[in-house]
Amino acid sequence: MDKKSNKQTPKTPPKMSRQVMTAILIFMAITLVYSLVSDPATEVKQYSLSEIAKNVVDGNVSKITVEGEKVKVELKDKTIGEGKKEPESALSDTLIRYGVTPAQLSSTPMEIKNESGFGYWMMNILPFALPMILIIFVVWMFLKQAKGGAMQAFTFGQSKARITDPNDKNNRVTFKDVAGAKEAKIELAEIVDFLKNPKKFLDIGARIPKGVILTGAPGTGKTLLARAVAGEAGVPFFHLSGSEFVEMFVGVGASRVRDLFKMAKRAAPSIVFIDEIDAVGRVRGTGVGGGNDEREQTLNQILVEMDGFEPNEKVIVMAATNRSDVLDPALMRPGRFDRRITLDLPDRADREEILKIHAVKKPLEEDVNIKVVAERTPGFSGADLYSLMNEAAILAAREERKKVKQFDLIRSIEKVMMGPERKSHLLSIQEKKITAYHEAGHALVASVLPYADPVHKVSIVSRGNAGGYTLKLPLEERRLQSKKEFLDDIAMSLGGYVAEEMIFGDITTGPSNDLQVATNLARAMVTRWGMSDEIGPIALESDGGRTMFGRGVDDKDYSERVSALIDSEVSKIMNNAFAVAKKVLNDNKNVLDAIANKLVEVETLEQDEYNQIIIAHGIKPKVKE
Image (cartoon, rainbow, N blue to C red; front, side, top):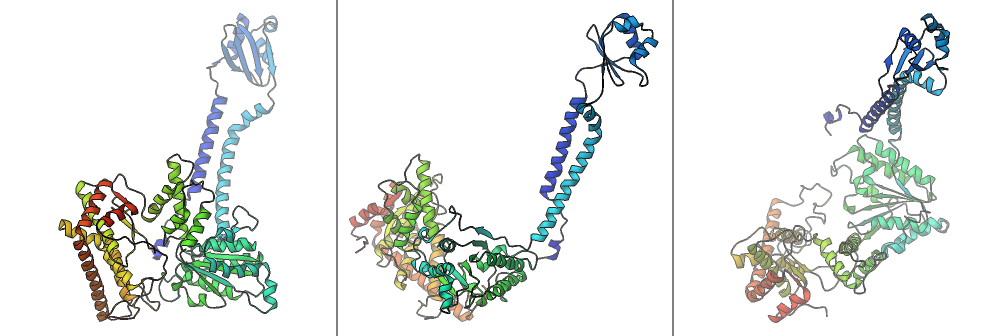
């Protein structure tokens, strides 16, 4: 970070500014109230003592009220006046000196009031006390703000971990709340057993695992599983993100690590869970991740704390990341993270179980078939499936229905995959025709090539960034893909490009994403999976897109000649796929026209409608045997 950026002029905190404004407003309100109380609403005439005496002699006075030195005179014509008497003598003596006879004085009602009580003292003290009270109030607020800043300085190095109490039933998660991940739950069941009964392991000389790291794609349930372990064991759960350790000031992260482990040891048996640990656990000394000294000091402190655990500490450290390849080897060695559990994307059976869990609190219509939804969502993570069920419930509520239908779930699949329908995005007649032929080209190539997945839906309704889409799904779950399947997928991706060029003699920007996907797949075949005849079985790049051996993104493990050969092989795969797609569409142009014309008419073709068109033209749809 640039040093100049650290020497900025300090600004008044927003909270302090609000407090000063509040004090000013309170002062203004008090002043207004006081002015209304102290100032009379009606105008009062001022009389001298001689005028009061003359009115008494003339018999015009109906009442005289004396309050200390203040004399209030009420005349018979309802006029009210005020005057002041001499402080050292009584009013009656003064009036006699001004010519009022005792008879006239006795005939005039006169009331003497003693100035005392709360109101009297408040009216006299308030003008002096109000400014003093306001000053004291403002000074107190400034002192409070300064004290708060000082306390923050003292607590800056303390851990900010969120603690889940084992007795909190509302936030408690157990293994029954986690569907799928059977192997992971078996591994973690041993951790639960240790936390419940550590003596069984210690008696036989087994050393309890200090750490468990959960790796897998985003949304596969790493955090949920960690919470489930704590819930099953009934122990406190300390949860925070790796980024919460790192601050601008050096040493704060290490201090927070020490405080976190101190808290966990006090609450033992307990679980410390660090989410996204790659924020602080990246390989040291490579420059990857910014080379932040604070980050490396934080990582060093984590390593020290994990080494300091004794066998009977009964504190388990769990961590989650989807980038285990960038973690420091010292963090991953046995004795620190002893267990490494990989969470894969759920298969069909697991997806069905996950959907059932998310459907518990959602009323479903009788036509809902969870199994069909699970079959149509290959590649969905647990988080995607949660979003799917939630979107279906939102769609039902938006249409004023009390239960979720199967149609809601099917629509939600596409919404989660590609985004909402853009009904306001109206295409011109020519654009609609181009989009129809584009999607028809994708669908037809996929239906003809033997290793491509079958088509489930074709639509020219805009969703997200796509002007249209072709939905194809595999017939069965698979963990491995072959070279032939990849080549057919690339040809299918180029089907829209070829159809536009063949029918309209021109190319639009529509195939841009198709070209990116196909090119990336072809490059991965060459550099990662050894599927190039020219280069052979050599891995030149890792799965993350980085080059091998922990080097930076721009470093290469191959020469310029090999780089040129890679480009040549990628170009060869793309050109061959283009030729395959072109041959399929030329040989079946009448089918292409039929699909495109139907799409222009109805905009969306479901699997059954689409299959009827290709069957009528002699193409057999792919079905599960």
